[in-house]
Every structure is written in structure tokens, then in C-alpha cells.
Length: 265
Image (cartoon, rainbow, N blue to C red; front, side):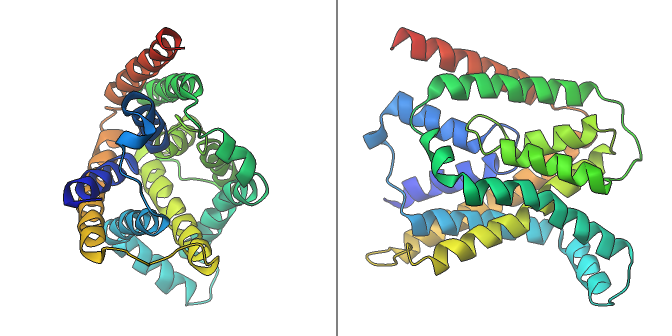
């Protein structure tokens, strides 16, 4: 892996972590179009570094919110911050359950199954289109909403379903305020990412042997900067109801993916 590869992978991670286009789906499509050997071979360590970069960019963007939440929690009172934190915990349950009990089954789906990716991108497009048409409200995310949004996050493990797109769409379609939906979507994934990173490190599967930390640092910086841009941009897009452009994009890519598979099947 050279500097250009690391930069490209970092930019892709930074953008697709927040924009509703499905990073896993685009990776599978890239493998099919370019061939598995044409893509740089990412080490688990590099993957962890990129995910840490986007998680950190979320922390920076929402630093004021996170500090307020922490202050509220350490006051040891039943306040708004404590309630919000509980909602985040509730939202993590479905994805945690699926990741723990069905991890091996889910990995089977990530094997150049481009037809599945294509159809899931079309599903993502439909969700984004419906979200764009929904009327904005001032309604905050409730406890029951948190669990349903968490289910959407768990389903988004499927390649082609955008995590940010699915969670924001579900929240908005439940009648929640669009800005609050985007904020909740980005904050709810931070504990999961840090938890997954901790699990990978403690499992002993990550090796730093022969790692080029300069190149990895370039990838980290690319993912971090791009992630901050994409996160800020996505909040504005949701607020201004501009998701239809991503819906059109996902639909077109989904259809092309299905056609490409049939022609080369």
C-alpha cells in the first residue's frame, strides 16, 4: 500500500461513513468491477485506524454535545443528558445482538454478492426519497423510537444499506425532527465504533508487524478531515431536504449493479 492508496481509502471511508451511499456496498461493487486483486489489501490495523479517524471526527463535530452529555451524566441526576444517553444505549442493543450472535452469517453476504448490493441500494434510495418528502417537526427521539432506529442500524449491516441513510430515514419517518434525527444518528454510532475497535484490539487479531505508520497516518488524516466535512455537510443536507439527490444516485448505481451482474453472469 502506498500513500495514494492510503489517501483514497481514507477519503472513501470519511465520505461513506456519513453520506447515505453505503460504504460496504460501494466496496463490494469496486471489487467486482476492478477485481479483488486490483484493490489495495487493507490490514485489519489500517481498517481500525480509518474507523477510529471517522469516530474521532464525529467527536470533534459534536464535542459540545458530548461534553454536555458527560456533564449531565456525572451530575448523577435524572436529567435530559441522562435520558439521551439511555436512548443511545437502547439504540445499540439490536446491532450489538446481531454482531455478537450472527457475525459469521453476516460475513457470508460480503462476497461479491452484487445483486444483493444492487437491490439494497434501491431500498436505500426509496428510504431517502421518502425521508426527503417527509414534513419536518420539532419532535425529539423517544425511547421506543431509539430501539426502532437501532433495528434500522442493525439491518444496515447488509451491504448496500446505508447506515446513516437508514437510521436518519427511520427517525424522520417516525415523525422526528430532521436535525435531531441526524444528530442522533451520528452520535449513536460512536460507542459502537469504539467498542468494535476495542474488541479487535483485545482479540489479538491486530498485528503491527511490517506496518508503515507514516502511510497509515496519511490514511488517518484523509479519513479524519473528509469525515468532518461529510458529517457537517450531511446535517445541512438533511435539514434542507436534499436527500433526493442521493436517492437518485443510489437508485442508478443499484440498477447498474444488477444489470452489470446479469451481463457478466
